[in-house]
Image 1 (cartoon, rainbow, N blue to C red):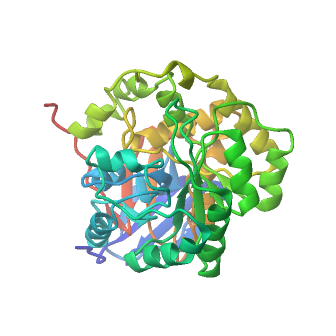
Image 2 (cartoon, rainbow, N blue to C red):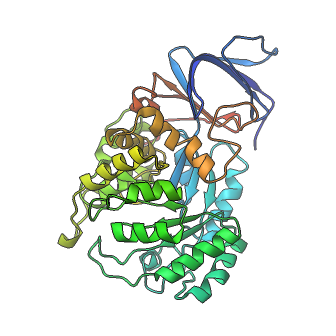
Length: 408
C-alpha cells in the first residue's frame, strides 16, 4: 500500500515540466503530490529527503499512449519510468483486476483501458481469441448496434472506445471490416457520452475515412503509401491526434529494433523473462504482399509535425519485438529521428497524452499534480536517449524499487 509519510525535495535539477525546460530548479513533493516547483532554493521541513539533482533532469512520469496489458506488464513498465499505460484493447475483467491492483502499489504503472474493441465477426482482432490471448468478445455489423455496443463497453469499465478498421490488406490477409457508417455511429455515440475514440488503421485510405468520421486519435501511422497532400492539414484542422508507433511498425514489417534494446546496458538488466522473450522473436515471416516502404510512416510523421498535428508516443507492447517500458524509450528515439525535437518527443510522452486523454492530474510537473516523476542522468531535452539513464522513479510520490532481473 502507499505510504505518504515522507517528503522529498529534489534540488538543483533541470526540469522538463511537460511544456518547458527550467535549467535549474527545486521540486518538493509529499502526500503523493507536488508541492513546490521553484527556481529559487527555499527551506524544507525537517525530515525531508534531499535528492541531489545536479547533472540530472527531472521529467514527468512517462505515459505510454498505446499498449496492450497482461499480468506482469505494469510492473515491467514502471521500472523503466512509464508510470501510466493506456491500454487500447484488453479483456475487460482482467484489466479491471490489474487496475485495482495498480491502485494499491507504486510497483505497478497506473492504467486506463479501452477494454473490448469494436470490430465485425471474424474481423481484425479475432485472431487474439484464436491464439488464446483474449476470451471471445462481442462484435457488431451495422450502425443500429453502435449505441448498445458503446454503452456495454462503458458499463464494463472502458475509459474510451477503440475501433478496429483493417481489411488485412497491409498484411496480405484479407478480412471483413467495419463499414464507414458503423464507424461513424460508434464515434457519435461515444462522443455523446463524452468518451474519446481511437481508430486502429494501417492504410492511408482508412486513416482518411477515420478522420472524416470524427475519431479523436489514430492508433498508428499508415504504411501502404505516402500521405495525401491534404491529410496532415485535415488532421490538424480536425484536431485528430496520431500515435505513430514507429517501433512496432518497423518490427512488424521487416525492420526490427528489438536487438538495440537487448544490447542497451541501461535497459536490458531491468527486463523480466517475458520481455526478453518478446524482444527475441526476430524477423516475422512476412507475406510478400505485406512488404512496405518503412520510410513512409517516418516521412509522414515529419509532415504531421510541420502541420501542427498532436503527436502521442505509444509502444504497442505486447506485440512481438516489444517490451513494456523499454519500447517507449525506443519510440522516443525514433520520433526524433523522424524529425521531432527531443522536447517535442518528450511532450508526446507526457503532457500531450495527459491532455488528450483528460488525465488532468499528471503529465506535468506543477504544484498540485501527482508526483509521478522520472529522474535521469544527463539532458534528454537535447539527447533523447538520456531518458534511459534512469536514476530514480516515483509513482504517486513513492519511490519505485528497481533491481536487475535474473536471466533464466
